[in-house]
Image 1: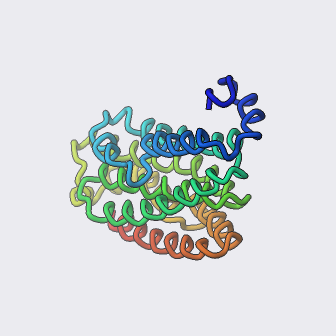
Image 2: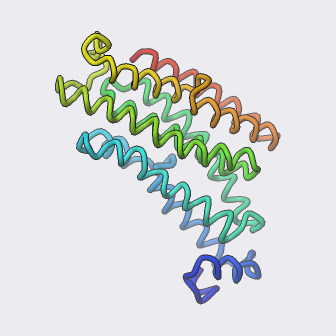
Length: 251
């Protein structure tokens, strides 16, 4: 991008790139941005580092890592694709289609893998892969509802997932336990922690009136507005929400 524009100022770059929408260098830049931000976001199939990183992070650091680290590159991707290169670039249009497909795959894979976990932390890690998929699908839609859903889910998920990692951090601090099968009776010994867990879990599933419901609702509206592949995304969102319900209600 610097070779095309001669600047690293993003505002100037956006203005100068307008005349180079079809440049091969833009294609290379968009491809590299998907890979770079995809790795940092843990976008499927570039998420391999995330489950171990989230699982074995220090309990005090895990809420910050889960709540913030994957969200910053998601916002950066939004900024680069829409405000610097521009959605009217043919390469960005194709890139958004790829991002949406990868996001949908991540939603299903993350939800299925989360159901298979015994360690609460690892369950949350794979759940994050699915949640990043929601953000990716929202960005890929490219319409107002999709962008609202993506940005809103970035904010909501930061609170939801940070809260859940704080919950398991508190349980580990008090009882040195992280296995889901060992959490029975937690409501009697840690009532405030249990209430936090319930609220965050309901939001992750998307039960109204929690924040997770509204981000998914806007995502469905954006998918309906997009038509075509949007109906596939709606089916993925519904299936994922059911899978979310299974593993969180099990907890």
